[in-house]
Image 1: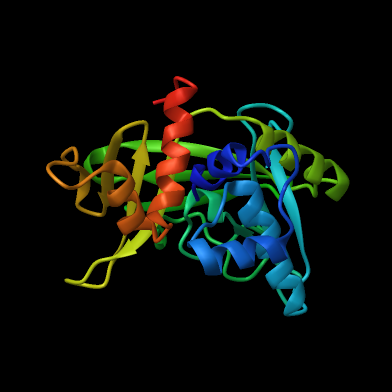
Image 2 (image 1 turned 45 degrees about the vertical axis):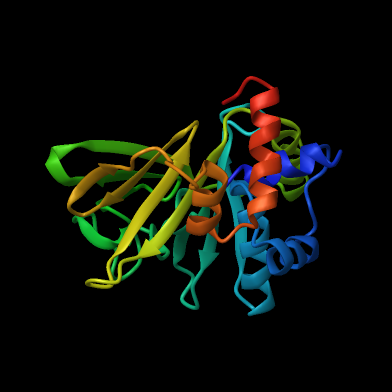
Length: 237
């Protein structure tokens, strides 16, 4: 998940409409871009439906600066699974309390750098994130489907906004193959793993933020630089 693409599109004068999934794929192939949570949700739904898997969007605070969205996928037995690429989940998690296999016990392997625990009443799901050192946080998802026209409208509104530069990426370590969470936000970067939180030093010498973000994310360095230049011009860096 990243807001580099959004700023790059703003710099190109393309700020008032969400991209089609075909355009997202084309730009991914050419520039290494992905998108924000709305982009990723629309792309995921297109992929799931292409495989014959029923799914629908969910969200909270849609139409605001604090909006977030995810996708619910329906298994062959009718069980519901939460898929949240915008928050960098590693795999979908079962959130249907009536389903065989549903558990509220802490689970590893679903979120980088944390165990998660699900509590669902079928209308809402609360996700507890348990990180090393005892730090915990919680997210609540409304499991009712969002009208897709409303969802597209919320995506367009989100596309029109610029807040702060954010890049999140799952990375697989070369030592033990575990998945960690790398994040850049407003001139700082850090890595979250099951061993804790590690802050990276600022770029030095020939290294730049654009180069580091490009190296970590796979986004074309010129695209990253254009986005960061716009954020700086808007006073958001």
